[in-house]
Image 1 (cartoon, rainbow, N blue to C red):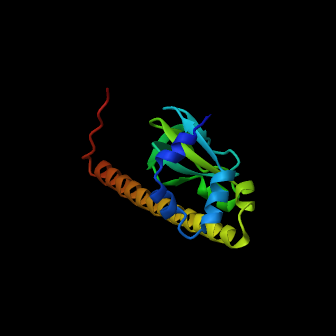
Image 2 (image 1 turned 30 degrees about the vertical axis):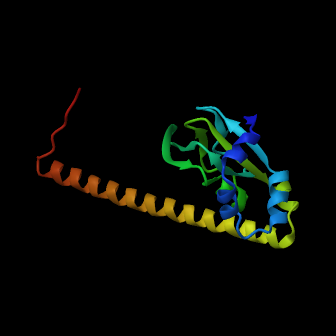
Image 3 (image 1 turned 90 degrees about the vertical axis):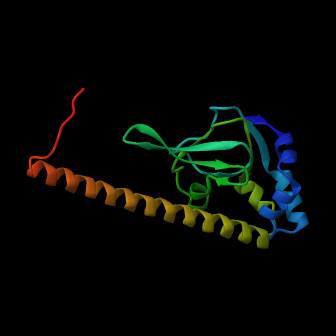
Length: 175
């Protein structure tokens, strides 16, 4: 990961003000001063599933694939773009990373650590942590909902296979 101060400049001032609208100008300056801006090349790993989650990232530009290890196989579960946060679940819940993030195109991210948050005043810290916690809870709810839907589809598929097998209607195709 290379230092990329240009990434912050390309992420428009309007976008930053919108993202951090609840923070004072002074707190925004503190945040920009203490955070790190890094560039990622295509295919470069930002974070790995299972690693400690001591930093949260704001994607300034580009796109990251979010990859989850499923039965030993990597599975892309979503893509996040400029303006999206990544790493908020592990950061706010103080758990290991729940997925990996890999740049699918050249990208820039703003890394915000606990040290960065500690540089903000107490009110700004509460705002920031609440925002990240709300986002983490929303993502967790989406994942739980997706898992329930997949389990339901899997159950219906198993029932259909069982039904067709019991009626002698199941065709097995072999290579």
